Image (cartoon, rainbow, N blue to C red; front, side, top):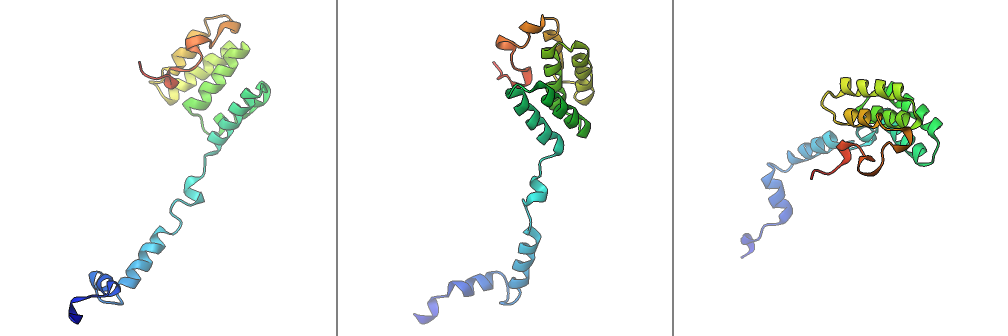
Length: 145
C-alpha cells in the first residue's frame, strides 16, 4: 500500500518536468506578469481627467472654470466627449457660433456621431429652452427604444 500514495508536491514537480526545471519556468512567468495592471497601464489620459473636472465644475455652476478645463482637455486630445461637452456649454451660454464650430470638429473626430446634429437642433431653440425634457441628454446617452 505504501507505493500507491504519491505526495502532491512530487506530482506537481513531475507534471512540470524534472524537479529543478519547473522553478525557472515559474520565475519566468512571475517576472513576465510583474507590473501587469500596474499604474502605468491604468493611468487616465489627461484629456479625460480634465473632462471629468469640467463636468464637476458645470455641476457646481462654475461655467467659466468648466470652459477653461474643456479648452485644456480639447487641447490635450480632442474627443467627441470633450467637444460635445464644450458645445453644449457654449450653446447653453448663448455662444452659438462656438457651439457650431465644436459640432463641426466633433464630426471630424467621429463622422457618424449623432450628438453633433442633436446640438445643432438645440441651437435652433431659444437659449432658455435648450436641452430640456427628452432632449436633455445626447442621443449617445439615451437607451434604445
